[in-house]
Image (cartoon, rainbow over all chains, first blue to last red; front, side, top):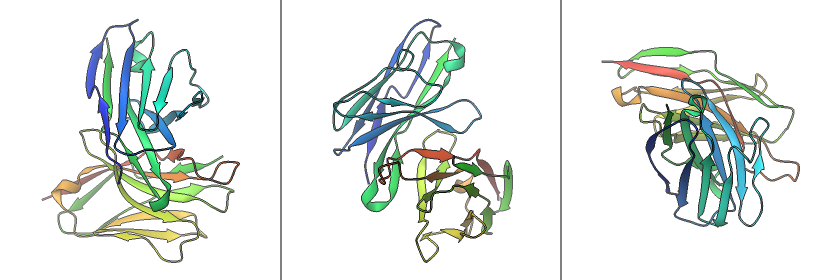
Length: 114
Length: 119
């Protein structure tokens, strides 16, 4: 199974600032996925990140607010821009192991915006 | 559109007993996958079990089994011999292939069930 790490594990940020979250996988993967989990809610897909192309965003999420980079097959970043308290969530990256019909998540980044 | 429904906001079970967490789904795609995840208070998502729509047998992984009833579109998780460490939020999720016919890992999640195991 894939081992996924995320940095930072948690952060407290001020309104109007930006935070970049890193996701590192221990094996090469075609696609990486970024999810958001707002307090007391379920997970919602933000975008799918392909290496060498622009990310594909889900309805309700835009690139200006959540820019994503995918410089290689093991790494991706998600930036939460111009943050407001409504952005306080857990952000998780995920990869698919299609061969074994499994999908793994990183440990998450717990973000609090004041 | 795909939809996952978990109707039990919270469940309680006595240690060492079995518990069933309900999940129903809705999709028009004949090919899909169903997942269960455990989320402890730390926030990590722990993969538990997978069931494919064409699988003939119910999936099992240790103390976890999936009661897959395709005609009823249900995929209930059964945890046998509950342990105190099983107390957590549990999510059911579904994945369907994209237009190209390959699965790209977009999961649709239910609202979750909080399981509390009593000693």
